[in-house]
Image 1: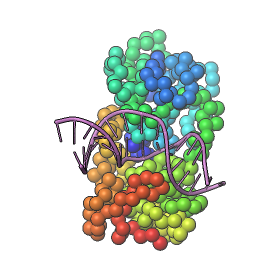
Image 2: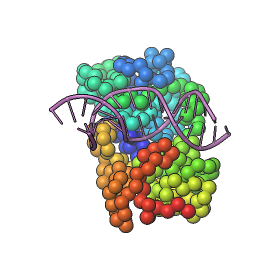
Image 3: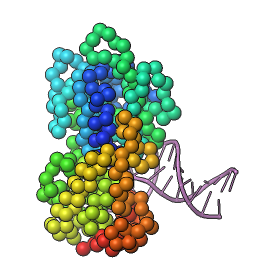
Image 4: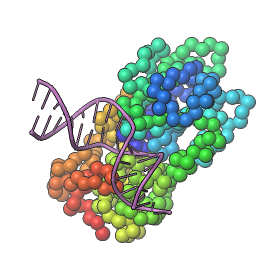
Length: 295
DNA sequence: ACGCGTGCCTGTTGGC
DNA sequence: TGCCAACAGGCACGCG
């Protein structure tokens, strides 16, 4: 379940392995994993990887595929003439294997990487996109396709780039409960179930609290807590639960800091009360009934 | 128009 | 020991 800190960690560990490489060929082993841009595969197989970045939970490879075409900026992203975009959903992962490595059981896409800008096309390695549950996807897009992609254009603020006031405001508008607001990618981009529950605990707000009932101070407290939790997780290379590894095969350590996520029935680390599991906004939710009060 | 429920997927876990 | 239901969950989609 890569969320913002995990996708950020993957981008950081993938970049040094692929930036400066040329994509020499692409293999689609599971057609549904290529959700858009099949027609651009020929262009992709001549493209060079310039940058690896992230927007919300999307991992974005910025490519140059035609030296004559000027790179076009997409709002919020570095300019490029072609984009390779991934959503990892729950079980997507990357790894760069040596040249010639065969596909694994759950390998969905393979990008062969060669040297950039040289007549010498000796392969450097193979970028595997593995995805056990195959919920994840890749999209190959021209800048104009990217800028017209509804999911992307609807994404909200980057929580770590926005100020506390702006984050509080994004969470406070609209109806529903506060956990649904945290998970709504149109308000803030990149938050999933782990960081929603953890930030609500740190802010001492009950997940089922109606957003409209929260004071300005409570929303600000949540904004501060959310940013602190995300920042700490990025510093610890994310949370490794189940299958998560970064693009270098490393695990993160933020799971050791969980106060509530996955701790149903265990004691609250602050007050000792048994933590409750419930369903809020359709998701499994764990909270401390004593520390986290609905207003 | 917005909030809610369901389907997509496969591997792991826990109960009987 | 073996079987199977429940569970993990982001997002598209359809319904009311």
